[in-house]
Amino acid sequence: MGTTSDVAAFDRGIRPLLRLILLDKAQEVLSFRPPAALEGRIEYLAERSTEGQLTASERAEYEGYVRANKFVAVLRRQARRLVEEP
Image (cartoon, rainbow, N blue to C red):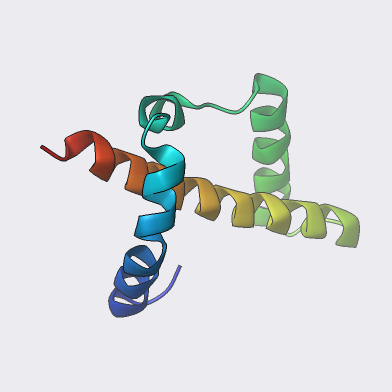
């Protein structure tokens, strides 16, 4: 996502909002898994990307999944903190 200080600042900046959103849903966020068909599509695109075989359309789609994955990682990180808080 970025440097350590920029990730820390981002987390501090969104934590109050995500606390409101995630407080009752933290466990659901932590256990969330995408549908198998979507995972398969992402794996397919990742493999084609590694091989340098993505079309322009596939590259755009794959980049969207990468951004979504980063967003989900942020949600999970914040949900984990909520669950671990005393």
